[in-house]
Length: 254
Ligand SMILES: [Zn+2]
Image (tube, rainbow, N blue to C red; front, side):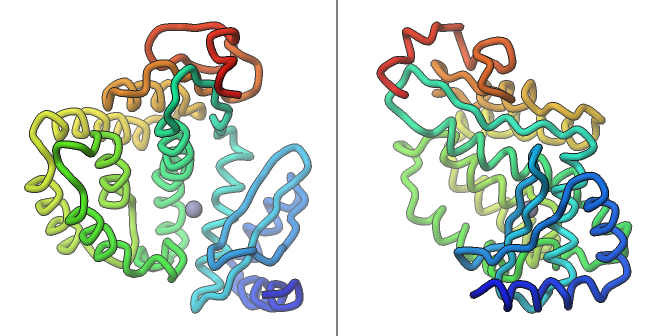
């Protein structure tokens, strides 16, 4: 898709008063630029330079644009991304989980605002995601209960816990039951403890999810030797998972 098509989709979204109002609100604080997505997914970023919204083809331009503007809104209200990673271990799971959590923790806070604006909860995610429940079920079937970690399973559980989406509550419950039947008890216990942190986060008004991310990773286990930061200022502006270490310890894994 090219820039012209992206602008056309954005214009269709902005014809909705709710989108136009939120767009204006964001744009006053953080200059919004519309860009063509390089894949099939919508996305956005908000930093000191402004906000970019990456537009992809969709049947729901209004909801998709509102969703991305909500990401910008909560960041402008203080939500702190924790996307700096330092590691002493030859493994990438904490980075993969950390990036997924950054997105999901925002979604849990954004969802009530999406509903309050009068949108359909089933359209909270971009329509490419409409088969997510059947995809997760298939992935769970191919996983190996002994070998796959609690974290690998928790990554799937995040989709089951995610607010809104096309599944509906009955389907969500069915998928959760399938998940519980599939995952070994000891791992399930860790996953449930980690999921409690997600609920606490949703109900709190904290803006830095760093402590929540640390607790989730320590509950799940297997991620000691990582540092997750809200800036590159190691170690002051971040959290160690497990015991502290120095940059010298991390020098093998730049
Ligand atoms: Zn999102």
